[in-house]
Image 1 (spheres, rainbow over the protein chains, first blue to last red):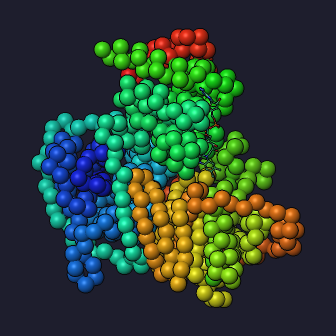
Image 2: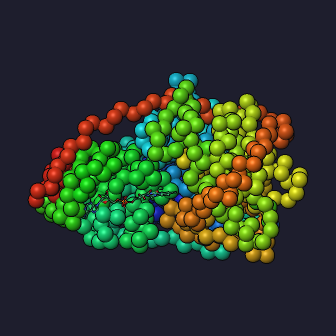
Image 3: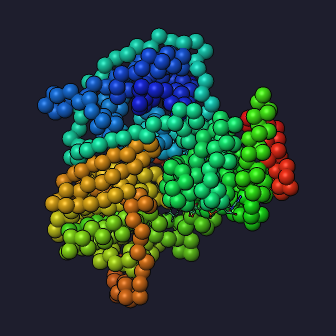
Length: 327
Length: 257
Ligand SMILES: Cc1cc2nc3c(=O)[nH]c(=O)nc-3n(C[C@H](O)[C@H](O)[C@H](O)COP(=O)(O)OP(=O)(O)OC[C@H]3O[C@@H](n4cnc5c(N)ncnc54)[C@H](O)[C@@H]3O)c2cc1C
Ligand SMILES: Nc1ncnc2c1ncn2[C@@H]1O[C@H](COP(=O)(O)O)[C@@H](O)[C@H]1O
């Protein structure tokens, strides 16, 4: 291992997300870790950065071409984020940038890599150093059926890393994190952001894209998600759905190829048939469990464990057992 | 309104997809127009219909095997189909693809203005969702991506975009680049008349030198691609009143609680 410097995107900087802690853990295994923030980090965020061994936070201070300070929501638009990351990389001479695998972060990653002439890997499930010292990203593709390894052949590497790629672990000893202002000129966007709304993450449940356990409901719930949420809450899990269930208005977020991609330690699908579109977003889960009344449901082909039965009976009973087990 | 729509030929997600020599295996039997590009075609057709005049041109970067994607676009009502094919593009990464698409758009612009480029939200083989934004950067146009609602009025494009846990409303004067999600519209089906009309259409092919494109240099290299081991046989429990307990026991046994 080397004197590599790894930049990690911290967006938002007002709260720390599990995905960011995972990125910091990966980064620490590869070199010196520095973070790039688009706003002032909160106090508890700073405390986490210290615990995770972040040497420096580069806090972007955006201004437009005329020199006016920019503090609006457009700071989160991919071209602006990319300008911040590229500026931080030029200043630190870092070798690598890590971002989470959200849609917005993928776009920011692509634009950063374009700006720097760097190689890009999206949705990596693991990051390592190859024999020749080059960065290698491993990816699980085709709905989790193939493993690939991809090498970045340029000096600088930009990667987006999927959630649950590693278990977050703080550094052996905390460091004293320095915050440094980073002047960034906002590029000409050619567009206007009329409004931006961020869905509040519902307090008690972990966010779907980061959770270690996910319970998902489909058309088989027939609109009643109570058994799904009951089991999820017993497990401290996130709740998701199939696209059909979301289109019916039964839940707000769906898992799948065009929805949220997840790779939790365990996925529990109740009343979900396992259509290819749905599989594309969950088949990389470490374990797959199904509750389905149909013994021929396609999801059973990719399951580790399944209960054939009515979800309205099975889920509450499981929840009850788990609550008892937890005491 | 003159619109370019980018389309890709990908292995059908319901077939057994795989790699050959570290490249995605693409066979005619298993290939299809990327389903999400049908939403792009639909959006383009609707915008031209709303404008009352114009043309939709489909462009793909692919070897000759990619033609069925353009043929399908013809059947949906697209007027012209262009395939950019060249040995120098074999193994192109996202940047190479975006550069080639941009060069094709510029070539079309030399014939007449291109008001809008419409793309799908992702190619279902690589699931990158990065080509639209790279193409826009290459063209120096704004990228309004992941739109679930689209309108154009007085030369201004407005979209509602939803991604992750964010909802945004964006506007930009044309020309611009737009990517649409699978919820933006319901793609039309090919009808008899269009299928017949499509038969008469020819795919135009452009080489790299036709569009003034230098050989792109890939910045990543696939080292290996291997099929994952089959999952062990599923452990099946039929609920006879104790199914929930069995589920809980499985989770507890595997340290998942
Ligand atoms: C372009 C495109 C993109 C798409 N993207 C996605 C995506 O990202 N994510 C996604 O999920 N879908 C997506 N879809 C839709 C997908 O193709 C399927 O239609 C959808 O996933 C099916 O949802 P489902 O499993 O809930 O419903 P169904 O397929 O109807 O399955 C319901 C299941 O519930 C079981 N069941 C019924 N009653 C009970 C009961 N009482 N107890 C237990 N089990 C019961 C049934 O046996 C059945 O297996 C997409 C489709 C298209 C065209
Ligand atoms: N080789 C290609 N030829 C034409 N269009 C493409 C190609 N690759 C990607 N696209 C377009 O870009 C969108 C997003 O692709 P991707 O970024 O690869 O997920 C697709 O839906 C297509 O519209």
